[in-house]
Length: 608
Image (cartoon, rainbow, N blue to C red; front, side, top):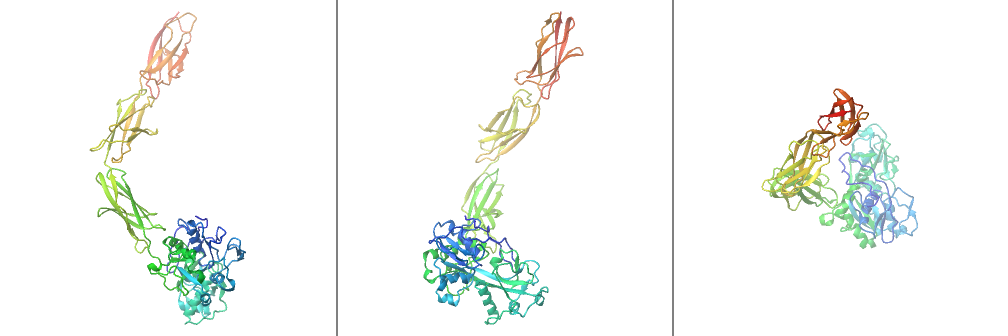
């Protein structure tokens, strides 16, 4: 999608006396230079953003140009950017048209410009424009209220029709006269050529009994839908599009007086049936389609309903549209997915979708005619867990129920059958039941389920070590542990990972590894010649194991320590100090370790 997407999703609707405001979108011209085959438009400030959205999309919603590489929709903003614009490739720059009248003037008369295919307009055709044969395609409805400074305005919260007329005729000049805070009122009207100005003055004329009112001398002129003269002036007031106000957080709208108007795209009478124009603007065209609705709403307006739905969207006209029937409903689809996460459980996920925006509401999950659960739709999905079910197949449907008063139609999913899993039991034992350090122990696992032999795998985790996965054979599995597993207590956690029809289960048991008994040996000579020293190797082993003990061995003669040695790979070579003549009894004293018990061995040497 184009980088010219300014808002994501649909902005909130206006309340009676205040609006939920969102960040104002940036202005932008087409990101490409239009060519002859493209549909190019200029004109109204009111509708420049909505036409940008319709061209390039916004948020997740695609615009016309996302699916049309040729015959692209181009819309040049009324304000912002350069003072001049190049409408089509190879054409000379023109002054940027600002306002509905400025745009429509390029479709007829002396100002006719063949590079302009349509004009954005926030007002109906004037008598002169009708005489020139112009035709207007209505597509959206906009409101008008009076705008004041967002915070700190001296205006009251609401003004009546009579008060509005009095302000612009100069009969009411201070906000305190109509319930506001004292301050000299500064009223504004949009600039000459603005469709909003024409519409607003027509409203004042109607309030004045059908006669054009004489505006007070202090009524100023401002750029339509610009906050420049309002946001910092507590006494300023100007007519404002309710749609555009939603993107202008620096202003707020007053309650009571309001007016509604249609928004149009205007073409030459000779072009009213042109295929490329009706494909975009006609009643069967993109602008009036369901897919365009979120784009129009993202700009703050409501899409008019098509003639098939009692509206006038896309029907060319030369008179002001008074049928404001809007596209009220959106069709939805509901899809259901399901799985069984545990015994007696079905997790059901309903996805509710439209062609555009994300629906809200609730979903009922039914088995037959019985509602088993209800879940709220969050980001287009409703998820529930139905528990307490019998093992076997269960068939569900999901029924989407829109929020009361919303624009979404209800829908029901196709049936979905879920195989609900039966329970399993996992048991753990060890072989040998009381293993010692240095001897490999086995973890024995058995998984059972009523009426079935579980298949699949188990995950076996000992202490903090990574789990190992072992495949079940006839419901059983085993894992041989390392013979160097330290002495002490170890938590063994086993999880049966489940299968299509059988739920997972777990078991935890403590494995106690006893310290090993040491076996001490030495290789000293039995007789040592006079003047020679005894040299030998001391070994500490675990019978039947290749694991080598660690620790220290002290060699004593009686209570006298002759040597203290540190074992390396279970042994150490040592030369004894000079011994007295005779038969000498020596003792090897192994101090043990965290994994091996202490031990002792006596031996004799004859010193010559």
